[in-house]
Length: 604
Image (cartoon, rainbow, N blue to C red; front, side, top):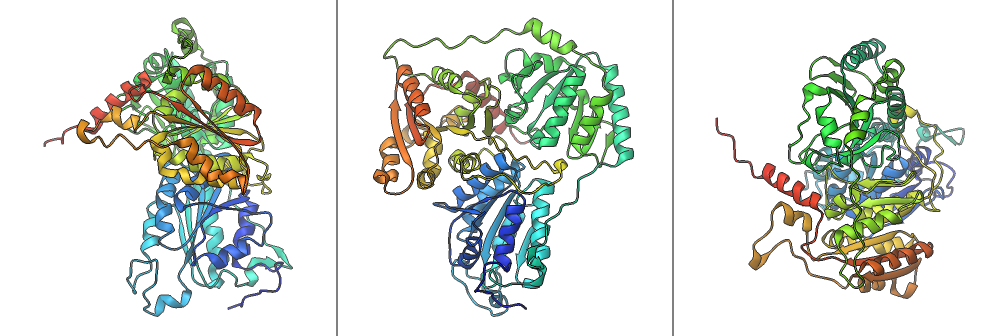
């Protein structure tokens, strides 16, 4: 075993090797919470100036921040200590797994000598014979796990884990024994330079691909009415490019699932809108559900995305492109096919068919814009959403928290270049605060251009365009994770956070309200602007802050206008909405999800 090499930062040790790998794949920021099991590792990570270390208030938010960073830059990283840190991190990593985000989760671990010493360790559950509880937990929410106890195996284990994250677009878990992070080994370098990281390219079986394209083109050419429907798994850049090419060549009408918003340009010439069953954009559900064949690319079907399993779209009317498989009308299935390869090949042979787009243009009636409110009238949810939509521009990234913010933002039409993120499949309230932290880092001046030229088919989407993040978050969600607004201030980030104060968990109310005498959906009201100002603490450390409260349309418009002017400030705007005011889409969606939740057991 090689020993520690304390006198030089040039020779790679395990911690520096991990940092080098993160930098190579374009992950130039790691979100961390220190603890005694990871302190030596953090010391090594800090020796790499190309890697920004962001110190979060808790591990949950560090995980959410890595989630947000991965959404923008293609891969994220968070670092925690053993058990007390890792267990706190689990929920965020579960969300990243659900949402198909490659997050590299690194944890400090016990001293390698303790595994055979029968020691009871602090921070653990107290079983001297078992240090594997955290590892077993992370097996449920990651696609690959390694515990590095021996320096000789570290190079292989680190590269296997990182490769698994990028190939599978899922989180991975790396546990590093606390006493080996500064050990060197010859496998980390060759002639004083880091051995480059490499990835196998995802590929399609040529024969399977050819057969799938032939069968798909036959089915499409025989259909009279065809729609292209895109889902959240078109996030990889190569898939998005191929989908646009197919849309151009086929002339199909295009719709998106709710959780795919922002992944297909809403200004596209044949874009219909969001397909979400009973709460779809006008005329979209009618066109999609009446089509002879719907080409679904990257769609994920769950009770939220199907509005309580109430969609009328059936598998027999679908040509499904998902999970490296192509399935035609719930029948013939072709495997070992990369979605980008298939969609690009199909675009070359498809026959143009604009029948559904023509039908859509005949029946589409633009929704009425919300009327402005009389001066002094309390702000409504509808007018608030209209005001935010008017504020959006190509330099904005809109992040929507779980709740009525979903429905208010999903019906907005995004201008060209405007980015959008939502966590719908997992739906963990409070996610948006940490995500804002990570996304703003990925957008801001500390983010760096990725150095790695990784295969495009892996979908490592790295964007260099700076955006100002605008986050819409409810008061109930905000109370879950509010602490890391202080981290945004500490690192001089400048998002605009619009907090919707309506006194409770509105989305839960519309699914199932609590008893009037002790309603669990009602929360304690805070003085939110004073709370944020207390975090700023007169600007003793970090960036600039501006806060405002808005209870009318005029006040909210003025606050957003001022926030745009204060581009070098974190701007926090609290808007006051009546507790019973919510979007009509939430009312419909909530009743259908409630019906799905309350189904009685099936008797046999």
